[in-house]
Image: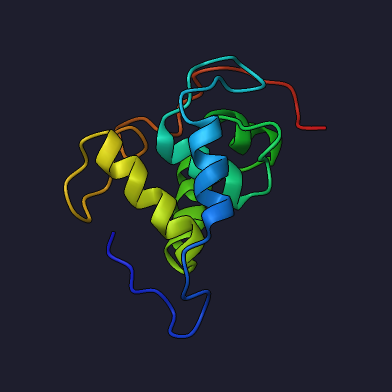
Length: 122
């Protein structure tokens, strides 16, 4: 999936987002306690869950969405905003994802198959 950011939208990286990313990197999902990949941290930040980050499966379950559908929508949102896009780039670097490749942690087979049954987000 290749995406070109919309012109003029959030053109500057945000130090606050990068600080939040660094603080949350390697923490566990607040719902299932699985260690989050950096890309899931960025998704949590983009969706406003900076105090209670969650893995993609738990975000999707709590928001009543299919994981692949939510992933694609949030990925587009992240790529349209430099503040989140810069954190995504840091996640790629830390996790060995080359260039603009899509990370295997989120783009894998059977993504929509449930891995946990978390409660709804409150």
